[in-house]
Image (cartoon, rainbow, N blue to C red; front, side):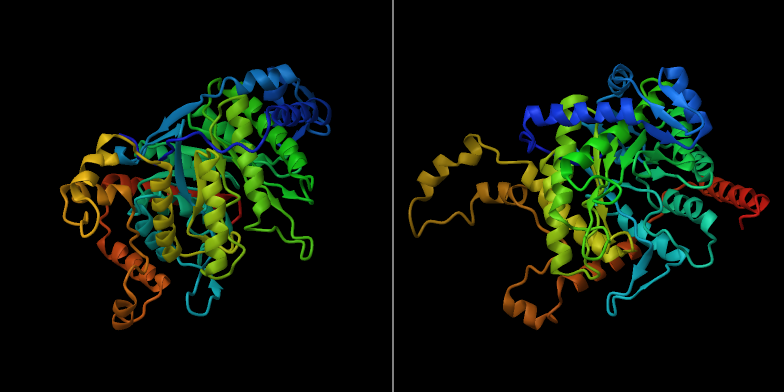
Length: 483
């Protein structure tokens, strides 16, 4: 039985009128047909040409007719299942269910000085072991938890990251895409008999790099889902207006879908939005900005209304804060909540801090509690004879009557609420007497307990096969003179 996820019991939040959706869609189809999209992969150009697109091999520009764009999107399944090593971690993407994924950080961070440093491979193992045991964490992006390692050369970072997750994180992972890394990551997934999904993110505006494209094609050929994604900065690589950014982003992802469906009709797709406003004072992406949520809520509504294709939200993943503090909390909570309510099927957020610059397992523990609270909210309010409790209310009457010792209270109190595991829930007197621990310290302690209790589940022969594939990757990059 697949992982439960957050199952919404009410209609999703919608912020666009029907006419607005149609206007954005029409503008994006115009961009595809007139402006076109650049694909730096020769193979992608040839596939598009065979599919019926107009291709200029000199400029590598592909112009896609409206009919081809629409027909390709309609080939995408509206839901699909992905296999994990343990069936309890399988995911069924689509419908009213939202899953949560780890978010990457280049480095780890010291929780006392807040200075970032490069993580060791062993620290990546440990972060995976902790996340593997978090109830409300269901998947992982690629290069996660960290995307730099001590004594690991850059070409080996993605293979090492995937190897670490496959060993110690028994949940669904994304793979790719840089310097042929997908070749070895697909081999690792095949060795374990699990599903992965391929990163296929646009280099905005309107350009797909060769590495991302080759990863996407390979995943489609092998029957794995693919994640076409947009990642513009509004005001820099995408238009500054949310409507304009949505127009370009929709065109970028549809172009990716046309390629995937031409490679293998029926390829499973989840479309990712990672658009951010630009901070016009500094020029940096405005992580944590409310404009991200506006973009993503509209993104979820557009894809649900037009094609029913599952959506991923990555823009709400990181905070602009460099600390795990109040700013980090409100930026993440608001963004994640709006993504859940607007119907995202996957949200990339857990553990990521300060843009994509850092990650910490203690934040993943706090995020697990946050998601648990959201899970309770989207379950809604159950109204029936038992929950209305009219007979009990009559029996109990006014004061001094109370409900504390009743069977009804014992039956319902857990299910009607949620008890976070890393929050300060003590009375003030208990807190003073117990060492005055802040929630971050409680999260650190819980992370350490999870690490100490981790039990490996990977069979020895599979473990050895992963090591062999990683060594093949090293030989591959040595032969190319890259390490």
